[in-house]
Amino acid sequence: QKEVEQDPGPLSVPEGAIVSLNCTYSNSAFQYFMWYRQYSRKGPELLMYTYSSGNKEDGRFTAQVDKSSKYISLFIRDSQPSDSATYLCAMSEEDSNYQLIWGAGTKLIIKP
Amino acid sequence: GAGVSQSPSNKVTEKGKDVELRCDPISGHTALYWYRQSLGQGLEFLIYFQGNSAPDKSGLPSDRFSAERTGGSVSTLTIQRTQQEDSAVYLCASSSSDGLQPQHFGDGTRLSIL
Image (cartoon, rainbow over all chains, first blue to last red):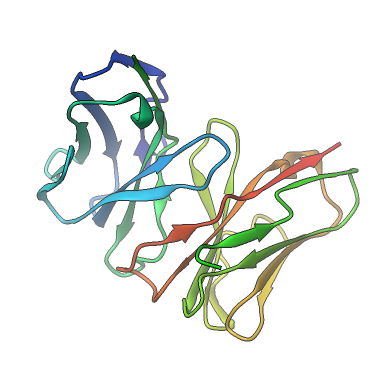
């Protein structure tokens, strides 16, 4: 079993919908949680970053961490075709916080 | 430049040849990371540099892989005697320090071993 599980998709939704992307993990020592967006043939770009549990909001994006369930989510409101990309979750432990453990990514398609 | 620069962007080579991949981090970033991304897979950590030293080489998959960083800036990832399973996208990232600072990625080198 992988340390971080993420549904590869593709997830296809109409423009304007609310999108929910999720990752589950097995390592209870993870403390830092990140979401990256990756367009085709480009490097990952950091979207959201949270420490420990709780919610964080930035514009149309909301990140949630539920450490008791070992489950993290990224919500995208008012989705746009430009949001079409692969979304990767990444996480790390407190003591080795430079070493990110990654999900495989979910491909998201926003249909105009 | 403004971002992390990697070269070449694409590399096709024959099995058994050696390849060198280059990473130019963001100016002033002390931490540098190499990852490998295979199709449909998440990023696989290879090695981490703080300055010119590599505190963690644990992700290098075999002794055919090596990396160095000089002058606290440019890094080179070398793969000797390439195998077909080495085909992947090799990504480099840098950050202003380890850990809490976000990692900024280049667009990668797409390596194909024939």
